[in-house]
Amino acid sequence: MPAKVQIARILKSDGTQGRVLVSFPEVDPEQIEGPVYIDFDGLPVPFFIEEVIPRGSVKAIVRFTGTSTLEDAEELVGRSVWCDALDDAQEEDFTGWKVLDENGTLRGTVSGVEPIPGNPCLLVDTENGQMMLPLHEDLILSVDEDSRELQMTIPDGLL
Image (cartoon, rainbow, N blue to C red; front, side, top):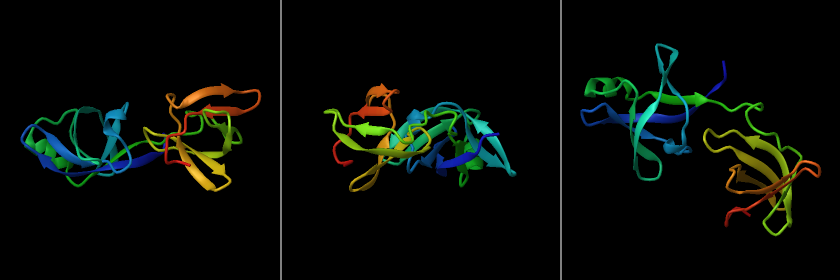
């Protein structure tokens, strides 16, 4: 069974339709695919997110599968939300690869992957220290397996 990573905390119920207010400090709930897990009596119970209504930058009103009443929502309050941690087999291993910017300038070398659920990041060693670079297909311009080079669009403010 894959390791679990805590991604959120259920803060309070919201209305009478089974919705809850959830804090997602590092994950965009709209990007979560597959089940999340909520512990009941020490056992992880799988739920799917059916509805997400953003509330600020780190909170959202959420309805999970099987929750449709205030009583259902109240049962979830105070619990942590978990998901499966990414393992090395799930993500491409770019460790040791060179990272080039959109102009082809060397920006650093990948030293590892930070498996943040829904937003894995490359750990890149640069001449100014280490930075985290989102590993997202929209940012990857080219992948050269022979020379082990990854050319990427690097968002402003990351360097």
